[in-house]
Image (cartoon, rainbow, N blue to C red; front, side, top):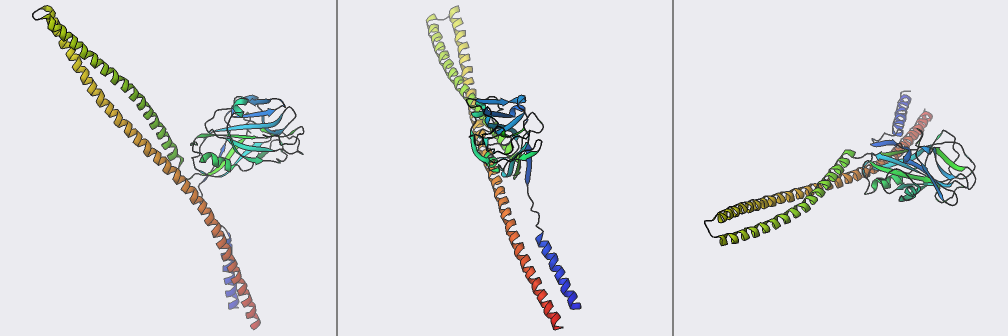
Length: 387
């Protein structure tokens, strides 16, 4: 019986080890989830085609954003959404992203609604205003959203994953922390079934149930570094621009001073020539001597002013060099920050691969433990028969 107890104890320990390996360890992540809302009624819009021209609506009068075919007078419907002040750094690793719609009502459920989702290439564009403003925005690659199933009024529905679009946005060289993301959703080519009511409608920005954008991303390095270096770079560029303007003004002043010096020299020469003709001892000659002395003093002061101004220009040149040097260093810091962010993203990818590898190792260990347990069971049966 003592051997049997020992075998049972060993078997129990093996079971505990199997269970321990089967429970995956939680990997530390630095993922951040944000849900962006439309801030204004003019941050969403609706466009549609009536067979001869396009219609457009935005602002408080827009009750529902739509996509699909509603009727001959309202089809190829498309909507736009503008999310401002997005707090994501350039180069961040986007894990997932999707739009969430709250159904406005239930319309024709047995037909096919086809649509695509795109983003705008300008990350600082303003609110929607007119159809020309809407259609004139540069659009990107798309994610298809076809065969949209029936919606029930008041229920929330998620779009397909659009992380590839958001990743393209934050990887763009023109993207900056705090930029705007503009998305478009609609039946651009009229691919939805042409039956009345074949569309999907969701609450607009006029409602608290308006369309939201959720993004899950790897925060990586702190956004403060990137945003601060960007702000410093912008300030330095502003200073450099003002210094250039001052330099242009200084050139004009230098030219004026040189002209004034020439005029003063000519004036002194003319007065000296008149003085030589006046002789000496007269009141006129005395007045002319005083005038020559005064003009000479003014000329000396002007020459001193030119020297001081030249020294000032040298100082401004040194300041401009310092500003440009600092701007270059800030640029290198920005590049370094972007590289660190990419490295962190690569590290995150590496940890994912490591997690998968560890999962395979755990599976192999579990199989080995099960094999050991099976062998022990066979040994136990042999032992029992021997008795």
